[in-house]
Structures are given as C-alpha cells and as structure tokens.
Amino acid sequence: MKPGKSAFVICCAVSVFILSGLFQGARFASALDVPDDAILYYDDSDEFEEDLPYLSEEDEASIQMALPEDTPENPLQPEEPESPKKTEAPKKQREAQQYLYHLLILDRLDCPSADIAAARDMTVLYSFKHGANGYLIAFYRTPAAGPMLPELPDESRIVLSLSAARTSILKDFVNSNPFRLHITHRAVIAELLKLL
Amino acid sequence: MKKRILMYVCTFLLSIVFFASALPAQEGRYTGKQIENRLSAVRAANPGDYILLKSGKKYVLTKEEIDIANKRFDYKDLSQVETKTQSDGTEVKTISEAHVAYVYKDGQAIHVLKTGASFSAFMKHIEDTYYITRYVDLLEEYHDVRKISSPRFDVFRASVQFQKMSNGTNEIEGIMITAYNHKGQNYMMRYCSDPDMIWGYISNRDSYKPTGESRQLDFDRE
Image (tube, rainbow over the protein chains, first blue to last red):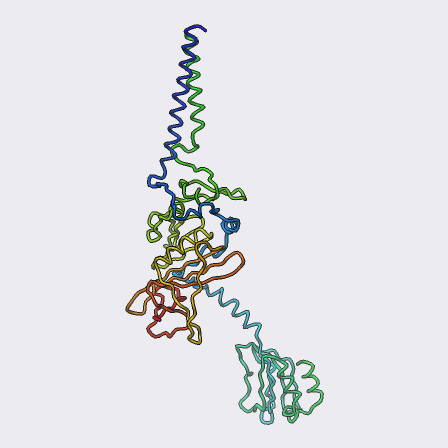
C-alpha cells in the first residue's frame, strides 16, 4: 500500500472513531438530561419485594379499562337548572296519562236541565237520565289535575260523587248494596259494569 | 490527490449522517426505554421509561411514580405534579397513569387509583398521616374497622375522598376510602385527622359536618 493511500485510510478511521465517540456522548448526555434530581438508589430493607412484578395481569386490565367512575363528579359543580321545557314536558305528559274516574248520581228533581254532557275537560263515558227529572247517573273521566265535578246548576243536588284512580274500585261499588239501593235499573248496572 | 480529498470529505459527511440518524428522534429530549415489569426495574427507571403491556400499550412511568416506588415521594406536596385545570376550576393532577387526583376549589379532593402498587403506596401515606375511625351502627354498637391488607391489595379501583369537616368551632379532615378488587369485593375505611373519632349513626348534635358541598361524611368524638 502506498504511503499516501494508507494515510488516507488511517485519517478516515480516526475520523469515524472520533465522530462515533462524539455522538455516543451526545446520546448519553441526553439520557441523563431529564432527571436531574432522580438519584437512583435501592432500598435494601425490602429486598424480598425486588422480585415482585410491578403490574399484575389484573393491574394491566384495570389500567386499560376506562370507567365513568374514573372521572368523579365535582361536588362543587352547580347543578344545571333544568330548563322549564324539560321538566314541564314530562310532567304534562304524566298528568295527561293520569286520569281519575268518577261516578256521579245527581238528583234533578228541582233542576231537570242539569246535565254533564257539555262539561269541559271531561270525557263522559256513560250517562243515563231517569225520566224527565229523575236521577242522572254518569260515569266520566277527568285529568288528575281536575276539574273533578262539572259545573252544575245551583238547584241540582249531588246524591253521590265517587272518584277513583282505578275503575275496579268503582266497579266494586257498583256491585255493592249501597249503590243498588239507589240504582235498581238493570240496564244501567249492566252498562256500567261493561264499562268498568 | 484531489480525488482522495474528495473521498475523505464524502466519508466524513456520510459518517455524520450515519451517527446523527442513530440519535433519539427528538433531539435533546429523552424518549424513554422499555423496562422490565419488576419493582426493581421501576425503581431504577428514568421518567419516560415504560413497561410494555401485553396488549402492546406502553405504561409510561412518571417521575412521581418512580419516586413513589423509591419511597421518596411526598404526597402532601403535589405542586410539581403535572396539572390540568378544568373549566370549573378543578385541578386534575396526574401522579401516574394509575393515580389521578382531582382537587376541587374548596380544598376537597378525590384520588382515583387503579393498581395494587399505587394503592398500597398511597395507603401507607394515609396510615402514617391520619387516624383510622370506628363505625357505629344503628344500635349504637361499635365495630372494629376493616383494614385493607397491606402492602399489596388486589385493587381494581379505589377512591380516596378528602373533606374538610367542622363542628362549628374546630375543623378536621375526613378521609373516606372505597376499594374494589377484581372479584367484585368492596372495602371501605374512614380515616380522620383527629384521633378517637367515630362515624355512622351518630347524633347530629356537635358532630362534624363537611364544610364543602358534599354531605357524605359525618364524624363525632368517640
């Protein structure tokens, strides 16, 4: 090998060696750069713990599982006032679904014109008039919020007004002696029982 | 001669490129290396080092977690812990991937823990700092407290709630610990900053009530 050629090879080798050293040093420095105060030491007192796995298989599962409880609710968080629409809508819906059923016996002796047919917010399910001025027997439904009774003329007299959330209660009454004392008309009883 | 100089320069430049590519991706920042899933390895780790979970996910160690493993972390001082502040003012302090503290504006705090190691270490701090309380039932019978076995408890989730409490004149700190293990068993313990305290069915008179918004903890003198 010529002297010039061998000098070139040596120069290259030296350069590579120096550069290698420089970059390795840079890597080492970057590794030490982060934890200035992380002085590592081992606690000899609990040597038996050294072989323990740090994370068990169950730990691995629980770490990777995200649960709603992982973000606890702030006890100071002011509760958002529910918008009136949100609260009122279901309330109205509930009220609309809740009905009261009424059984009414009206004495029309002094007020033959008394009737419940035109009553507002009421659904008349059955009504029967005994003669021109006899009893009015009515079975009707109203919203739970009312009104409970129809607007009746002053002269009319209520003999019986019974309200219940369940029709079975009214049915029991229709089948009972007190009701039969007032109402003996078989067709009326049969119709009412059919509806109840 | 010129040819040799040119070759030398080329070799030199190639060497720079080769060794530079071997540097960490983010220059000047330690990206962390994989460590063994052992307590000893965690103690010797640097922040950013990670344990590779079986799913392939990296469990990255924080400086605080390494300090906890080395028993040199001060739980009373969370000022250096990575903190994010939520819109309602709640500070979310990530002590580790398995231990997150929610610190509320009125001083209350809830710590959520997910591993046996994080729970055991935090429980050691609680036991060293606070007094365990006894439970009184409806018949005014006192019950021994149930202690969660130390140093390791198979924890699936644990919640540690800190509350300031007052009887109108004195203020104390109450701690409620609820832990679930992987079998679905539930353990609850209560600690207090004052000794000889009881909780459960106690008279409302002169008892300690939470000063924050929550109304879950009541304490009284034994």
